[in-house]
Length: 68
Image (tube, rainbow, N blue to C red; front, top):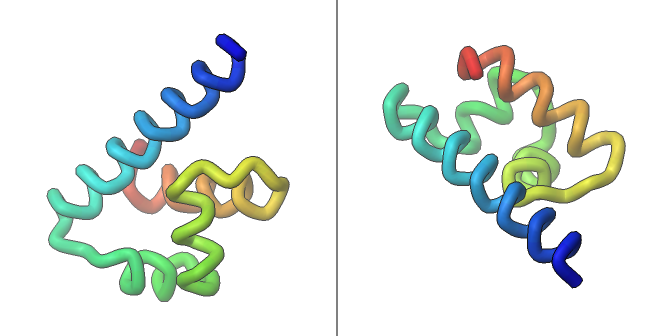
C-alpha cells in the first residue's frame, strides 16, 4: 500500500498548489473552468486528483493558465 499512499499524497499536494494559485489570483474554480472551457465538475475532479486521461488533460490546461 505504500504506492497508493504516495499517490494520494501527491494528489493532495497538487490540489493544494492549484487552490493556492486560485486564491492568489482571486479566482474561483467556476471562473477557471470558464476560462479553460471545461465543465466545472470535470475541473473539480481533475483538481482533486482523478487519474483518467481527461482529468490529466484538464490539469495541463490548469497548469498553463495558472503558470505552474
